[in-house]
Length: 136
Image: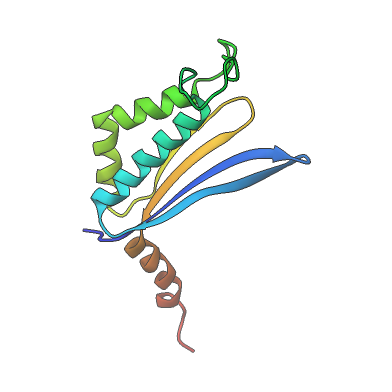
């Protein structure tokens, strides 16, 4: 069982003709449950900022406009992932097994990526080259 997890959220877009990543947060989770909670929380956080409630009192009238029906529904996809227990269980199983978990979705301009990986698995990957160096 892997005990500690490193989680990242990044938005990627094109700037000056190059793909650029903008970090939106990092968390070192001491447990699997907290890693999963953080990923769901960040997915919800992104969804709320991309698709806010236009009736919220802190938005001036007519300040939030709908997007075209052809625009990919990133907030909807993120909310769906948060509520899909089968996907949550699969992600937790992969993390517990030491595998990288990547949740990614995109719209016309931006890709949103949530990553989580075992700190133990990362440490083991770093030591493998040291173990395979031939002795002179």
